Length: 117
Length: 114
Image (cartoon, rainbow over all chains, first blue to last red; front, side, top):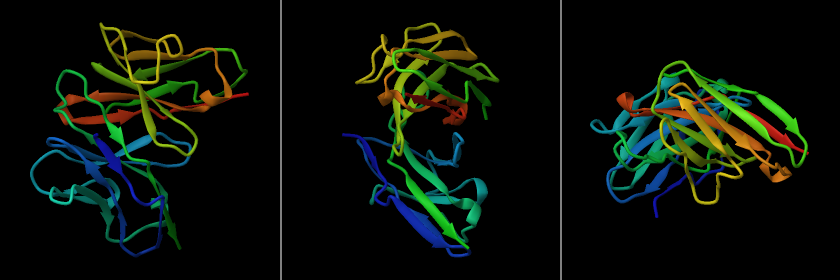
């Protein structure tokens, strides 16, 4: 079955330190991978995506993610965390080309990132 | 990116009543989706609402409980019918933009059923 796993419910990081939020997926075929962030009382905001090409993709707010096909992972990273990065982060996967037809975005359970001063 | 607004932003409703949530997009989009996010949970797709066709519901969701309208390319409604406390969730509208292979979300409607 197609699925997305975020193995950590919460990640705690000190401000200024690098952060990693993990995501792995189970898929048949070529996935499109996404990260979204949800701040309290707000909707989901798109951070970045991997479609094809360079395995390291850069997104909003200084975040980046690395696609690793052999490990079926797409971990979110940032070199230096900010307190304002504290939020709920969702990894998501789409398994079909996004043109016509029906394409379902599958979400992981979410990881709460807490950045401490 | 598409700018999506939802009304209402939040509501408190009584058991047995119905609530209609509106979703407005600032550009014409073919693919619209409705998601539910239960407290402390991830997002679950309720249905896909493409203009000009009947909504397609995911397993566990039925039209009688969650009727959807899609009258044009910029607007959709989701009705939560005969509500119970288990329907207390955030309901999010989402649109797909094939050109950028992206999907954008509205701010959500926070529903509490007493």
